[in-house]
Image (cartoon, rainbow, N blue to C red; front, side, top):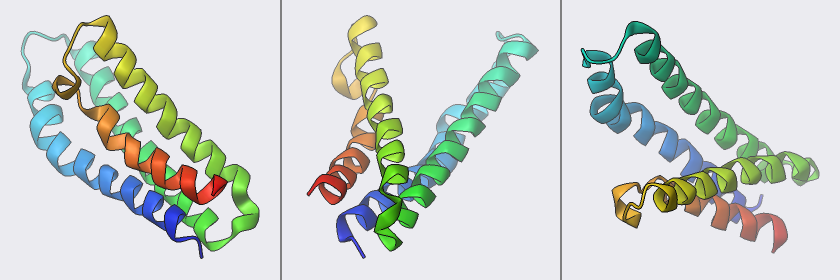
Length: 123
């Protein structure tokens, strides 16, 4: 079993739980309560929030599969690509909207998945 990929999997599952509980309380509930958004915008964002939850759980499962069966390395590369693209998207939004790094810390939450998984797959 590859310990680094196990750590990447745990980081993904942990991020999924953080997203579900802290994100639900801090972002999803206020979103649904926002009167200034029309129903279509509100429910589209709510739907996207759930898609993120699903993707985080599936990334964790993909990395767990690779940790248990190293012949499934392509699955691990795909999970890492997803996590890396999330880091890039976050940093791109920070740059585009002229934010400070910690004003939009999502990049930092995906980074351990990329680092641990990268060490496990490459190293």
